Amino acid sequence: EAQVTQNPRYLITVTGKKLTVTCSQNMNHEYMSWYRQDPGLGLRQIYYSMNVEVTDKGDVPEGYKVSRKEKRNFPLILESPSPNQTSLYFCASSFGATNEKLFFGSGTQLSVL
Amino acid sequence: SQQGEEDPQALSIQEGENATMNCSYKTSINNLQWYRQNSGRGLVHLILIRSNEREKHSGRLRVTLDTSKKSSSLLITASRAADTASYFCATDNAGGTSYGKLTFGQGTILTVHP
Image (cartoon, rainbow over all chains, first blue to last red):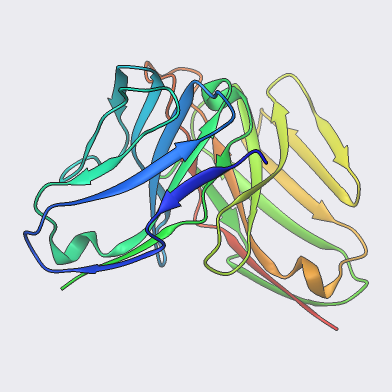
């Protein structure tokens, strides 16, 4: 089944403790992207990747890192999480960046205490 | 700044009625997409309309695009309780240098009462 898989689904952590949210897609998509969703603010793009080893900043990249060493994986790294990074995070992928439909993961609800 | 903005923020209708949601954006686009989200779940793609298209249909969904007004509308006909969800528009930026940027609006919360 074609899908974007995010893990974990829920994560509670403390300020400053490094964490990684994994994202994997099995559709051979070149484009992958991370979003955070906050009440009243909609979805905001954090980082995106056009292909392996090609990443770029979205609208809210501060405090986040990404890597794209393999086509199927696009992990989101929070080196030193802070409470303002408490949010619902989504990974998405597509064949052709913004001119093709995105497939979304189920989301990761992160709470930073 | 927000590229796409939906209107209304919330819409409450009865089953069988039509629901119309609007999206306005600021800069030129190559395409505009509509997505649906059930509470807390991942978004699901509904329709993509390109800048050279004016109208597109998919089942009970009808999307229009007016590039001169920088606006789009999503019409759901004969709504069902199962259509209850949040609906988002998403736009790229034709004039921008960041090809991979896709900006979502804040969404319209649609509630369909049985």
